[in-house]
Length: 485
Image (cartoon, rainbow, N blue to C red):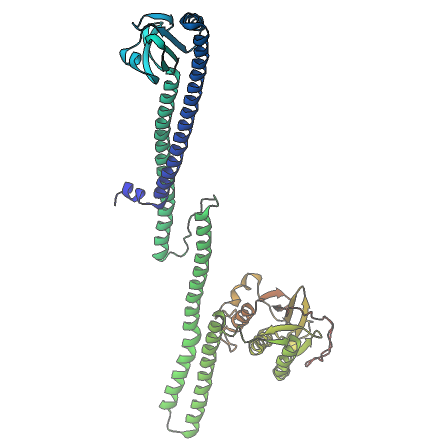
């Protein structure tokens, strides 16, 4: 397909041709209507003027006979203008008037008639068009009263010429404008197509060009660029997940296999076999937990569980989760304190919210708890608070650990991301990812802040419609004394 054929087949060019055809048809109808009405109006005025003159001359003829008529016509013929008069006897001899000669066709005619006559001009004689009414008098005399209509004929020629030239110019401008607009649009579409082909080839960092005009193509390109950015983010996340799966799942699988091989190499011993099988089950349970977490995150991101919601008191859910981790906190030598508002109403899935809160507390105890001997003047504690304001309920889990650098706070919300390089602590790096997915499912957010020292993780959820949470804490703290928010 040639470039010109491709251009002519564009929607823009075809629309331009359609608009041009419609506009030309409307213009032709308007011009013809104007021309026709102008012609009718001028013809009516001309006939009325000639008829009025004929009536006046007829009255003069009845009053004074042919002599009176000849005298009046001679008098009117000397008045400058476009009026034409002729009074002639039956032998075509001119008695009065400014028409020197008439053709045989005009002489034999009766009533309205158009004819050509000659009159002096700067360059000689010229032929001009006239309209007259031929009236036969008694005795064979002729009375001709008319008007020079050469100017009207020139006007008609001018209108026709203007219409033709106007249509020609419109055609030139319409086709040229359609060609120019189509070329510009086709160039932008080709540019977009070339960029999309590059993206389809694997370069997800490319973006569709935006001209800055704010037109529909720019709005489309901006929407597609947002989609491409999201796709690139998801693809990068998939690559990162794949890398982390290879690291986090390959190691326990190798450990599991080596343990079984080691047990097989040892002399047969029921106690050793039993111990090896128990450790193998533990490793398998860990792997199953990792896969279950991945499935849970995938289900949450797909919107599963979004309809199974009830009216909940968030403080009660937090209190139940904190009670489960009291033994863990005591074993680690960390004070687990809760600071709960009186009533924080939300609408959500109790199981998902409970799992999210448990993950936050578990992370705080695992990575943010500092034994008393290493507290450096700060109490070794994890504090869980609930509050509500500005239409949102908040759960804040605060610790005194090393915290998370500000540059890493977004990254740690991704799957399999663990800032602990040695990965000595058990876990898969999916805890915060699961909490973030639960927050998004409930229309909330998860953010990380500095606790000076330590980390403060805040889960924010919309309050239930029509309900207002209180800030006064009166629920007993499972792990310590009650403190006001």
